[in-house]
Length: 157
Length: 259
Image 1 (cartoon, chains in turn green, yellow):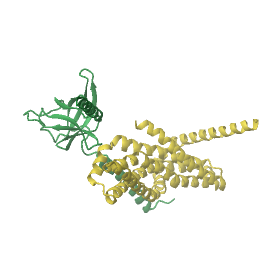
Image 2: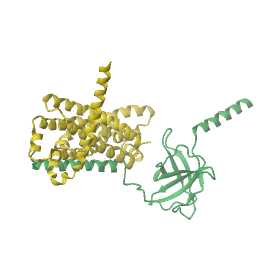
Image 3: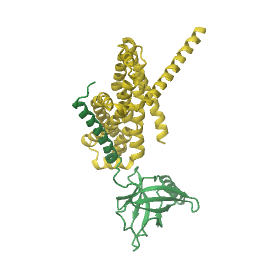
């Protein structure tokens, strides 16, 4: 087969199209740009129950995505779950007495960590721990409590 | 009765023989891969034949597969009120399975069968013995450029297929059915991981499929009975065997990569 100019241009076009597709998949689909692995600082929080929280779950403050959960571990001394979060360096000024709670987005949605800022002068830094935490709401436990209170009320009346 | 066992034995021996010859063939090709750098223009011509000329079918199929995923995903998700997750559904299924697998099946049908027919016909018209007579190694001159071209083209085609598929899903979901555009992309970006979904899914799978499909196609052509009937049988075997190999390997790779 003779190599023509059209073939060379075609192959060049094909290769660049393929690489452009990979770039699009990396940037637009997997969102490589925001929250790279090394950026930001890590903070810890201990929860009694984390429900369905997973690694890479969102960390939000006032509804704005400010970081991600990077590691979930179990502390067998305190019998609590340890959640390590990575906060984007743009959000430096978060008071140390900030409260962390686990919420659900929508009725059936994803669980995420919500931070409610406190009023302390000191701000969070690499490795600091959030002391005030609130566990995830477990649907079954809520139902149980509701049914229990209803039965007790019915028996009393 | 003895005839039956003899027939079974002959059949299984024939299968093992072909498998062994195929593996030897692959090793011989791999040992000669260095020839790629001696005559890169040969590979360029094959990338044109194998890759560029498959672009249209890959692009059109990708767009339609993405659009169908958008439609079906929307219809299922809207019953749970979670149609914002449409982006995740489309991107996950395309990147992990449909992109590499469908590209490999189309590649086997479009490029693999052409490779087998070409090599088989060269053998039937005694061009390969002629090359040997002239002291040219047909494995180096004919097979290596085609093998490398398959290895290069298949991942590129899979990436193009997946990207066009995602755009097709976007067009269908956001453009026609009215899913919120921001939610479509942000949910997708929230759940897609670069390493597992793009790297393992699209890239690694398509490289493996490309290597296997091109190997089967070239071996069937090189090993074909040098008659017109033999070439046609070899072409059929290429499509059947490489499709089966792709589907079986996909199961193994999925089991290894995603837990």
